[in-house]
Length: 248
Image (tube, rainbow, N blue to C red; front, side, top):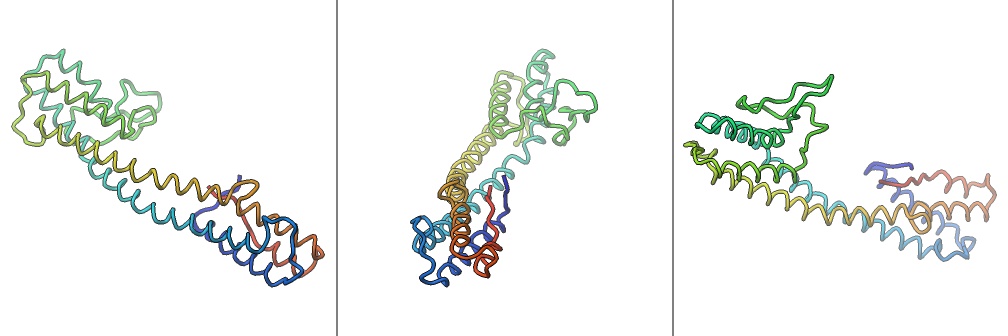
């Protein structure tokens, strides 16, 4: 399937408007029997398509802002979890407790249990300030997963009475507050992305429907003009030169 960028969508709209203008200039010779390509229908299609593009443009900034805000909320997670895990290791917790909690930490940091051949060595959660690993193809790094693992990590810390750090950001209350912010930020993305997804779906349907979409209608107009005028006529050359491509 041919696709276009956002600029391609604008090109489709502009070309469709030009196509409609050409048809109108043909005067009484433009009298299709198919109501889908009447002048009124063409003007209506252009209006609906324009409104659908405007709806996407209106919804996108809100979704983008929510996504950016979520990135900010989640950005300190790796450093905080790394520091918290090292604090746990230094508080006198038993080796068994450390071993039990380590898999959750590894998941939070996107660390594999073992390194696949040819891949970069995963991040060491015992190194303060360690960033996310370069190889994350098999890790569970979705935001939903991070929220799930963070909740499990906090619950594990609650069961260790020796984990009582003096550092404010490492206290369970602070970790719990961070988890709450993560959940809120993730929900905001979902709430703001839903209208964008719906708007894009409607826009794409208006452009791409194989029977009634803008691209299909434009091709019907070209065929009709070709039937009224000769294939080598100036009229047909004008409309055939206009490009229409399905969008994604």
